[in-house]
Length: 119
Image (cartoon, rainbow, N blue to C red):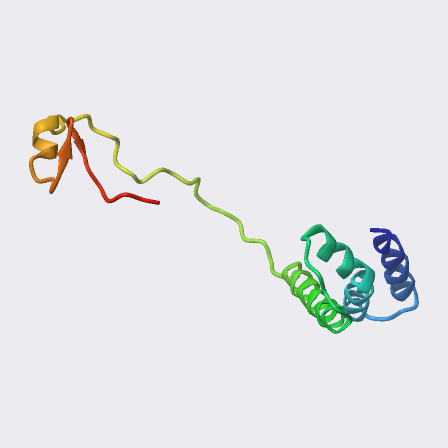
């Protein structure tokens, strides 16, 4: 996707122009997704889109990228404790014999459960 290099250049120019970071982030997301990028993704997914759908997806992809940029603003948390496994250890116990396992089965054949046929 050659759009990425163009959008990076545009975003850098917007930041150098003195605009705020949030405006640059919105502009970069809007520029990063254009109709050609949407058509490319649709081709990869083997989906046919008409022009109205391409326009709709262009807007939706830009909004999704804005959400990802909002995640960059979430502060990282520090872990005080190391994670530990709270599950009990497995214990080997005697299981059922074949006769005991099949004793309540509605139908058996040659020592196996018989279930409904699947077509």
